[in-house]
Length: 214
Ligand SMILES: C[S@@+](CC[C@H](N)C(=O)[O-])C[C@H]1O[C@@H](n2cnc3c(N)ncnc32)[C@H](O)[C@@H]1O
Image 1 (cartoon, rainbow, N blue to C red):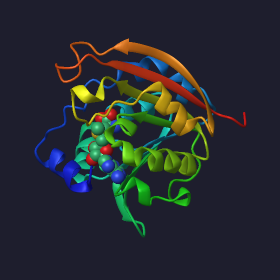
Image 2: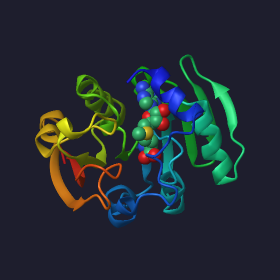
Image 3: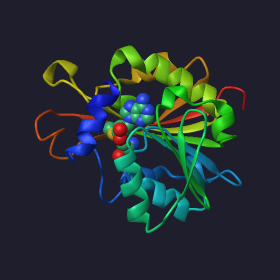
Image 4: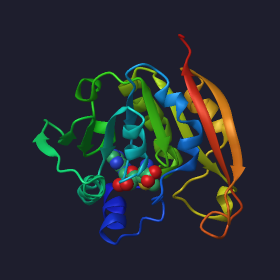
């Protein structure tokens, strides 16, 4: 998926991936991210997810990354906030106390840009990317976060039944991508209600990825 694909999704308001009430799976499993003292959570490919508001309400500081300026404006509007906007060498940065969102390419961010984080929240980020980009994505998550604890929500289904996104990502693939750096626990696996896009039987899978060095 190139950048133009996602910009067009936002321009045309084709954002079926957005959960207006936020993710019940985050509510069920938030301690993975909220338990550490002074939690600071990276949210890659964040869109305008309501989950950011939820993490803020749980006392997390949040760092989001998103390509679309439209998405970021809607995110802050829906939070009822007017961010301060500054420019880094590579990204536009939107900040309010507790929340920073970088506008631009996730793959162009450096660890110094975002600072240290205690966790990573991936909902619909890994599965937004085609197989050819997922290895690079996992490496970038690991590099930016320093192997911080991760709550990862994937969807799995028969890829032949439907083109992505969202793409099917199996437990085997999560293991291949992340096992070198993390120990992986499957926390939950549940059928997608009403099938994926109303068409394809699918399963949401929630993983906890913990640093191997713990
Ligand atoms: C499937 S949506 C998921 C959004 C959000 N995580 C959620 O749960 O609603 C994927 C998002 O990633 C953004 N995106 C895609 N490629 C990106 C990239 N290389 N860097 C930053 N954001 C990107 C898109 O604009 C889109 O908003």
